[in-house]
Image (cartoon, helix red, strand yellow):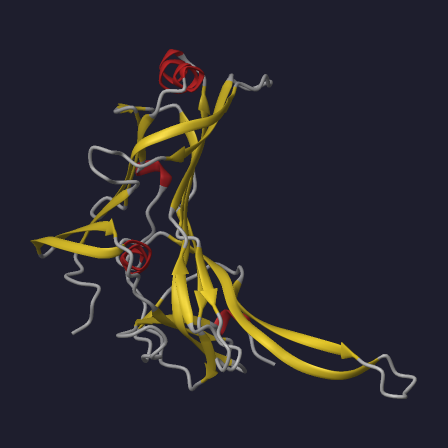
Length: 310
């Protein structure tokens, strides 16, 4: 029997989808989720002059999907931003490289090693289907990673190699709506969705043969105190159906991540009555900005020169 505190999650960028490279970077995650194996076991009932109803069993398609929640470290997150966006343009020099992530159709894939000690599984062809950032007052900033993989194989675990950085904290974060900083904010979530579908073919042995991006989405939600600023920038613009810009800046004091949504349409906004100060909540969806052809962008400044190993 193995102790979960000794588990590890490690990743490696693949050269081609599903080639199963050896992982080289370990990610500290919270005790949540993980990739799970879903085998489509099909039980077949046929007349066979027997009293038993079920007489055959066969395997259909296999799915390898799951989520990880982790504290936001400025170096680790670059792997998954690159995985979600697909392109990383790097400028600057040590110790401040600037990574500008933009969306492209071809998404890189990873081999993810999920080491549970008694079961060490490597999930090849792992694609970043979703990436959600959660900012809450008084808490470390968290991100949740949604993964879909092509195949699984048992391997010998690597020796984990971790980042030495501290997590980014909400106390140093800031939220801008419509270009105005909103200090009254208490919580904010930014969810990036790739909406990846795995495609199966005859002769594919139950593993995915293709992956297909059905279109990206960005969902934003937040809660804060109601005052003249939040009324003008949130509630009034929601009532007018006016799109606003949204920007979240997160930092550990040295390294910085900025996620920008140029056009966010607020789909709900409420002002619940409670015993505390009056609150305002809102949810919104990003729409394509015709001026920049951008749905969302991210800029990460840290000391990592590249996320593509030579």
